[in-house]
Image (cartoon, rainbow, N blue to C red; front, side, top):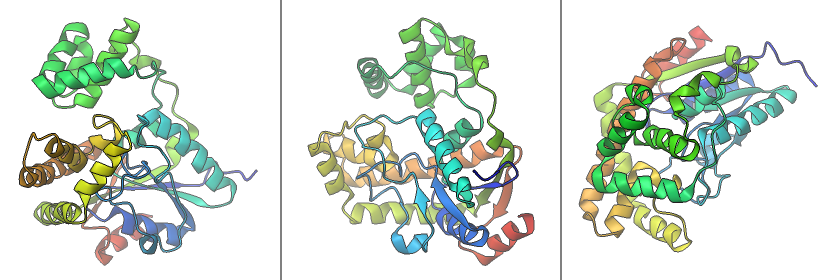
Length: 309
């Protein structure tokens, strides 16, 4: 097997709609690489319209991995992805190629670099009960529950971060142990951690929001509602991870009669704008991130990347 200790691993990220795919593919072509997806929605099979999965022509002949390979009925986790990604990177490097990670789910990337401690398997009944509480009483109610059972965890988890709040509550109710008490039990970072060079796109915010609004509207026009109907008819859980993404969640609310179609579109646009803002906030905490000002398809951005390569 080839020695790969010194081979760099590149990661291209940034807010949604910032041109990560274009830049990642161009970088892969430049370094003789293959793309490894780290977008938590693009992993699902059959979840297509609102996921911005790269089209064949966008891939430009570059092999892409970890896209559309998980059934939407499965609640796939960041730890699951990290294991699959590490194996994929090893395979890419064994063939003398370079791994180029491309995506916007910062938690996935952080989990690859800082493995999580072992946690109990998902208790579907418990998760559904917590999800019902969130839908009926809001994320704030779940966070208040967490304050009672694990105040240390509640201090580090934002009130509106219902996903992490639910995981912390699930851990406590399934094991009787506070999740904050086992955070220190994380395994040591893998050797690949030191080899990752992270580039993050930072486009103009107003222009980014305009692109988000336009792309979200295009998803609705392209048949997003029919896609969700088809998935629900196949038995996909409307409250599961696969349909928990922004536009899919709002379409489910529309189909349940909880909002109008116009409201579903407008709320989806707001959700995605808010998500883009959170993504930028997340990556500001990555001390080694190399920031690139602009969109991924701009020549000035490519020149910034080459200068830092």
